[in-house]
Image (cartoon, rainbow, N blue to C red; front, side, top):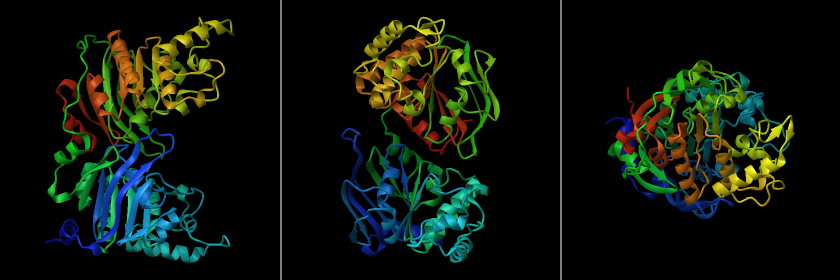
Length: 524
C-alpha cells in the first residue's frame, strides 16, 4: 500500500478526537440586506490531520464563505468552531494564523511594486513598522526549497508570472507554519504542469500531518489530490465521502440534482440566417493569462444558445469581446456576416446588439443618473427622444413610465430618483426593458433573472421566448442550469476557456452538463 493510500485510509476511517484538527458545528452565516437568506445553513464540517479534504460545489454554494469563516475573515452568525477539540473565536485573519489556520485566497492579495519578501513581511507583526527583511528572505528561501516553490525573495511581484505569484501567496501563509491550510480555487491561474506540482506539495504537507482544505469546482482535481470530499449546495452540506468510494456521476448528482429540468415549449428554430458567428476566438483574462482558447460557434436568428459553466471559465471574457468591452487577441466575431472583431461598443450597439451585463451596477447603469436618464442611456441621441440635439423630455417620460409599468419596477419618481438607491432587482428590470424594447438582432444576456422574484422571472422568460419568436438571437449566459435548460435550444459548455460541449437541449441531460462543467468529460 502506498503512503498516500495509507494516509487516505486513515483519514477516511479514523474518527478519534486527536485526528480532528478543525471542526465546525452548526455554522450559519447571513449578510445584512440579503433578504433573510442564509449563505451557510447549519454546516457541520471537519478537517483531519494528514488529509486533503475537498470542498466541491457550484458557484454560490458557500465554499468560499465557509473558508473565510474558518480563517477569521468573516464572523459567523451562529454555531461554533473547534480547534483540536477546544472552542475558539476568530475575530480576524490574524486570530486565524495565531491559532494555526491559514488561507490562500482565489484573488491574489499581493502588492505588485514590492518584492516577494516585502509582501511576506507585510503580514508580520512589527510595532515600529520595520521588518527584518534579511531574516524574511532567508525563511522564504527555506520554504521555497522545502516545498519546491521556487521563487526569488528579492524579485518584484509585478515581474513574476501568475504561477509564481500563486507560489508567493502560498509561501506567505506557510511562513506562519499553519496546521490547517485552506486553499480557494488555487489552480485557477496555473498551467496544468504547475497544478500538478501544487498537488504534489499538498500531498507532502498532508504527509507531515497538516490538514488541507482544497476548494474547487474542477472534479478531475478532486480525484487527483483529495482523500475526502464534502459537497455543498445552496449553503448546505450534501454529505462527505471518501474519494476512493465515490464517482464523478455520484458527485454530479449531489451538486446538480437528479431531476431533469423542464424545457419551455416553443416551435423549432426555422431560420438558417446566422446572427452571430464566433470563429477561433482568443482573449486574455484580467491577469493577462489566456481566458478564451479558440472558441467557435454559430447562433441563428430566432435561436437561444445557453452558455453553461462555472464562473471563471471564460464566460465573462466571451461576452465582453462580443459586446466590445474587451479586445480579442485572435479569431473573429461576425454579426450578420460582417466582421465586428474589436469594434467599439457603440458600433456594436448600432449593429443591433443589446447587452444585459453581469455587473449591472458597474456596467449596466450610471448610478448617479436618475431613472429616466438610464432608461434612454443608449437611445437619447435618436428620435423620438431628441431632435437636433434637444431632448424631448415628454417622450422620454412616457417611454420610461411604460417600461417601468411593463416589468413592474418600483420607482418613486422617474426624474428625481437616483438609480443608485434602487434595489438590484429593480435595476435589473430597468436594464431588461431598456435592452429589449427595440427587438434587437442579438441579445447577450448574462444572469438576466438574478435578483428577480418569481413573477419577474416568469415575465423575463416569456419576454425572451417572444423575442425568439420574432427573430432575435439570444446568447444566454447563466449559472442556473434550470434557466439554461428552460430557455435554450442548444447548450454550449465552457471549461477553462474552451468549448467542451455543444448539445441540443432536447437531447441533453443535467448530469452530463454537470460533468462537462466540472471538466470531468468532453464531447468531441
